[in-house]
Length: 114
Image (cartoon, rainbow, N blue to C red; front, side, top):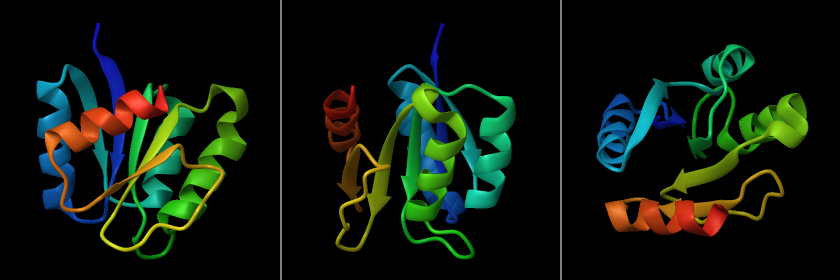
């Protein structure tokens, strides 16, 4: 059975690309384009991993990660942030990936957050 991953990015192209990369790595990706939509999805689905963009309108990746962690508590999966800017430390995020990134960058981040 494939591990479920939630990909959160306001850029649909990025979501699609990350989804395809993770599919080839054996994951079952779910794509969503906002933090608000992501919070709805985690309320009705269990995920093994979350890949989240930091810079999104309305609710950024930091705030979304915080709310996910507060909602799921000890059941929170690893959260990997993807960003084109310099990341700031955040206790709700396990690790960061800088954009643009490769499949090996994603794999390394998954390995580091396990």
